[in-house]
Image (cartoon, rainbow, N blue to C red; front, side, top):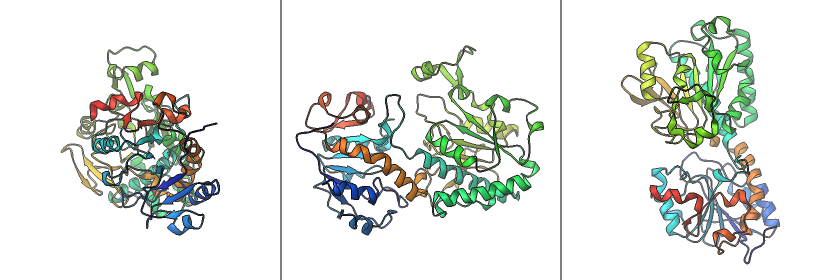
Amino acid sequence: MYICKKAMKTIAIREENKYPNEKRTPLIPQHVKHFVQQGYTVLVEPSVKRIFKNEDYEQVGAKVTSDLTTADLILGIKEIPLESILPHKTYMFFSHVIKGQPYNMPMLRKLMESKVNLIDYEKITDDLGKRLIFFGKFAGYAGFVNTLWTVGKQLSLKGIVTPFAKINQTHTYPSLKDVKKALSLVGQEIAKVGFPQEIRPFVIGITGYGNVSQGVQELLHLLPCQEILPETLLDPSFSDKTDGKIVYFVVFKEEDLVRKRNGSYEEFDLYHYYQHPEDYESRFFDYLPKLSVLIHGSYWDSRYPRVVTKDELAQLQDKGISKLIAIGDISCDPNGGIECTPFGTSIDDPVLTYFPISREHKMGFYPDGIPVMAVDILPSELPYDASTAFSNMLKPFIPMVTACDFSLPFENLNLPSSLKKALILHNGELTPSYNYLTQYL
């Protein structure tokens, strides 16, 4: 039980104003009603684009207002513009600062100057490090559909007709249920007519096995599919044994992505890799020529080898050994794990084409390049379903946060460990686990 000297009883939901198409909300009206009934005051910043209307919140007892100055706890999803940061508040949102992201350091400095408490959803984990509040599966859902849509558009541009041409961008479907229905119909057509000879075997590579990957695989199984091991791709006779009416897919784990730099063939040690990533190099190029589609859904930061480099894409094209139709960069780290992703794209303009030889890119589709789908707010393409799932996960944590006396020293804060280790700032000061961020400030 969490008790404090002065409970925080006013919660605010801020308007998401970083992206024009951001329709998600961290707390749905149904759960707002619960907190109002528990004696909380809930403020909701007005929004014309949020998936739930302002009136939906008013009807359950919330106050729709642009003035959040009386709020104790402010809930959001994406980063907050500097001018919107209020002093001496407790914030919960995806801050995107834990990698020292340069574009968010001004925001972090402002949060520090404002003496706020910052809890990052991304770092709320259990004792085994498993995330407890996330949109990852919905990023996987939307990213998978958008990638297949990209494949269909690119192949059509080249005069190759496939069932994927009947897939639309995710945000055009009213719900996840409608997405699944559409994919099932495409799956039936693949099973009936198969793929054109020039793109057989059709192989999707998926990096990672977390929430994003799980979302991708859930929808993938609505198509006639078969999982194969990474080493199967390297079998010279693999293509001869394949079926043109099946989508083959491979899930790549860390041990498939990297190898020791010294050429050692010792058994892969995941713990050692995490502790000493500098001792490893990418081995993904071994598999890249065999893939029709690459979906990148694994974590990456600058300590780790890139999954795909610009040099490797140029080498593939120069040697004429690439069968890569499209890349779905769900993780969307600019110039990161997929080096040819220069920035996140928008829902309205979701695809850029990368030209490996010139190392240039253009927005849109071009037949002589590699289209890259890199929408960086993918879950917002399924705003109702994503918000509902997220709110269900967030709801139990709110009483724990509002019951905390943040005036106490960090070591004495009455927070469960899952929340305490997600507290990046305590009254404007970096907490012990995040002191490393000073080097980026």
